[in-house]
Image (cartoon, rainbow, N blue to C red; front, side, top):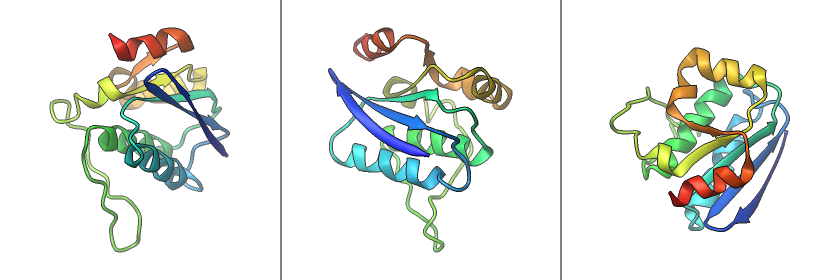
Amino acid sequence: MQISFSKQENVTVLHLMGDVDSSNYTDVIIKAQELFDSGTRNLLLDLTKVPYVSSAGLMAFHTIARIFSGHSIQGSESGRPTFRAINPKEDASAREHVKLLSPQSAVEQVLDVVGLKHFFEIHADLDAAIKSFAA
């Protein structure tokens, strides 16, 4: 998997390419944490080139939402981030700061099955996604 980012207006776009799974989900979390620590407050996850997301990848997306809500993801003794269930009230601000761009149909189906399709705001158009952060 490859991870890159670009900045457009007040939004950082995190471009993911390849499967997001147990072999790399922590890399995605670490990059998002680095972006947050450097001042990024609005993040668009570009899933255009992500054909598959495992349960570990879904945890990464939720963890990123928690980071951008201002919650700590202090790791356990194993060095991995700690995870918790989605709390719609507590995690509501995440929807304002983390959005998804163009998930492929298989990824969108997984997001739907686990309920994250309704948690995250999903956009099919980059310009509309960028503008949605200012709204």
